[in-house]
Image 1 (cartoon, one colour):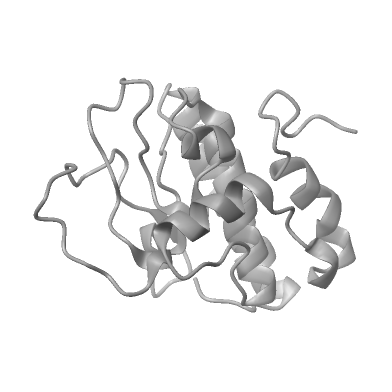
Image 2: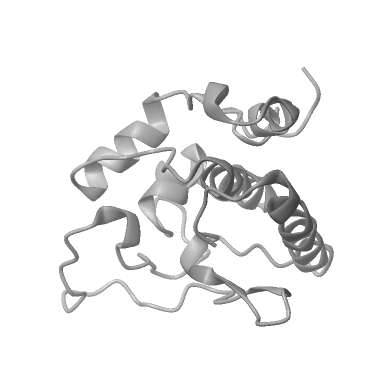
Length: 169
């Protein structure tokens, strides 16, 4: 799902991703780790969202990864408050703070994936996982490079306050 994709290429994939998340959310499932590595496109152009549920357990044997954007998922009892779970560059601010999450965390991650799909660039970058988490918590995404027709959607997905996410401004 690497971008940049043309608008014509992106729109059917965006719709399929929205449909997949809506289906999961209607079933009470929050992905919590939506990222390009968990999205596949089949040879016939169907989008598949993979890895529902956080698969890796937080432990000392997690391998070191030099690129924090593809760092392993951090998990530990999904219902515990105060535990960070997910992949740093795709976590919502509330997720990065270790707060409880709901479908709005997936909406945030969808916005990050959409941004990358349209621009071919990462929204949040950093040398380390900690740097990326700090960027998620403090940096406002620059959506000016995105096609104008998607900027409002991105703004609504990437609202820092989860209570405002996807509510019209």
